Length: 272
Image 1 (cartoon, rainbow, N blue to C red):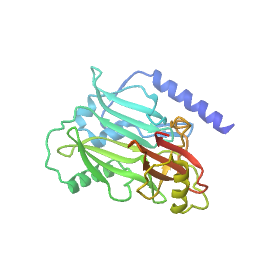
Image 2 (image 1 turned 120 degrees about the vertical axis):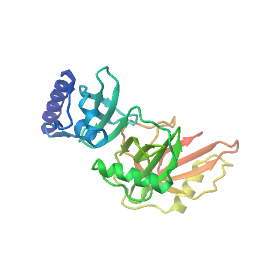
Image 3 (image 1 turned 90 degrees about the horizontal axis):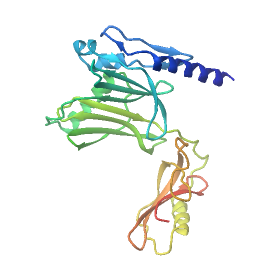
Image 4 (image 1 turned 90 degrees about the vertical axis):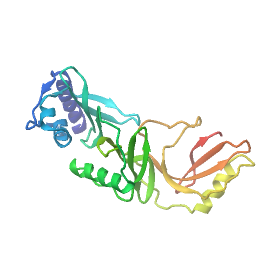
């Protein structure tokens, strides 16, 4: 009953925010949204850390909207725009208030010369400036379309969660272009983890005859799939699985995913 009242109160608050007109802001004005136990970092707090005061004073806060991410997570979206409607800054948060995405517009991508260690240092500086948690472990660094991507893969119990983690996007000169933080829901891991050798034997028994398996099984958090190889549902909890990769006789790659405890088939990726 408490959850129903909370959700109704949240819906009323969001509808009121969405129907409100855009609001001009100044650098010293940073409203806090707190309603029915729902806390959201105001976009002006983020903007104060990223934009110059004069630039910030000329922007307008658009009404809050509710969106859904590509992974199916429901989020609130806040946008700062110019007087003529051009987007300058976008911030998305999970419904519990956790920051999920920051995107800046019109960042000059030219420049360069940043070393890998320099890019990591710039990314860490941006995370600290925004008061965000510093990820554990070393990141990977790569370039794409004039941008530098510094990515920390999320690990739970030492096992990677594919597509989850913290990604900081910088310009070639090291300026922040945006960042994203993805955290999928996870099912409780099994009490007992089966041995990799047993997982390999179980996978080979399921694979078509003649499939070549040259790599040992690896643990990962995966989404169970249906018989068509598609995820069972958006935002379904990921499960800890042994993943066994092979190559069919025609050269097609295939991956079999087995429950890490029972070795029951969770799904596959590739041709059956």
